[in-house]
Image 1 (cartoon, rainbow, N blue to C red):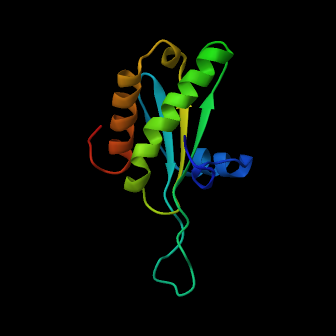
Image 2: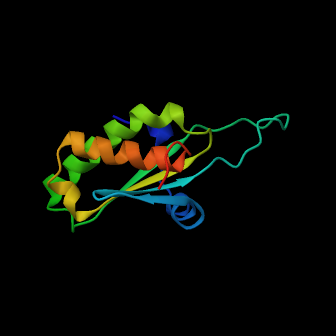
Length: 123
């Protein structure tokens, strides 16, 4: 489970991550990352934690499949939150093939997308 303080809940946060962030696409998902905008060197300004949100449409499958995909993605993103810059906004959008994918396939695609966005991998 992803604790509440690490979740995106407001529409504006989703829109900011998608419209102003960087994007990395993989066969099963697309990851949008908006790096933190607070300056840790400014006195009195604290860095909020990185937060993540998920978009799983009906194209992925029925309600049971969509919820299963969201649970898997939440679990996988939770492992990567410490790697993200403070204040970052991450939106993970599942593509239609994600409903048929297993946990390992989702993990590989998420790892590759985040590695690319964080500067650890080439196109």
